[in-house]
Amino acid sequence: MNIILNQNKICAIIPFYNEKKTIAEVINRTLNFVDTVIAVDDGSTDNSSGYVQVKKNIILLKHRSNEGKGSALNTGFKTSIENNFRFTITLDADLQHPPEEIPKFIDALKEYDIVIGNRLSDLSDMPIQRILSNKISSVLLSLKTGQKIIDSQCGFRGFRTKILENILPHFQGYEAESEILIKAARKKYTTGFVSIPTVYGNEKSKIRGTQLFFEFIKTLFI
Image (cartoon, rainbow, N blue to C red):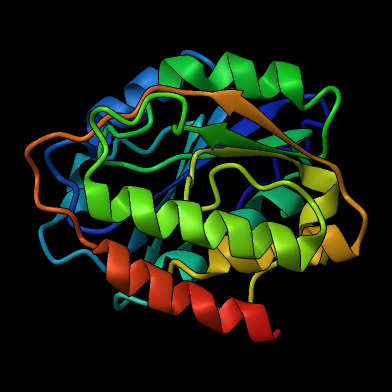
């Protein structure tokens, strides 16, 4: 892989699994706000990668099988570290994270080490089971880390790339996103939040609130 070595530039990591309907749009919209997109295909079986146009500012990485979101993030993080980006943004490939919100994260990263999207200022479009699991997990994670965590389950995040090597997740599933925050708190890294809209379409979610919550519980024992 060619090393980009752009210390002041910004990348976005987009992990995806069977998102052929949306992946191209998410990448194209994201490129309006970052220098490079790192798209990580986590073993898709619907030829999602075929909809990713690899070029100078788009890096496509592939897992042979579906390993989980944490594993996909790890693959993307390591590539961001290797290429020495200043900031790293993570967002989902299903259009639930509007790329147009990225400037908020970039601005907040001038003050914080990690910035998390907060969807809880408007709960009108969030399924009730996701509200409950999110609120409970956010309270428990706040107690675990000693920091106020408002929206623990939001994967729309920003990082100062220089800290990523110290907080790479061990878990391979969605619980990795909580693990990252626990490791960051232990390193005394600062965490901020920016408000983002809650977007849920008619598509069938790949996860359920109860599943996510029980996966999260494992992180409380690390």
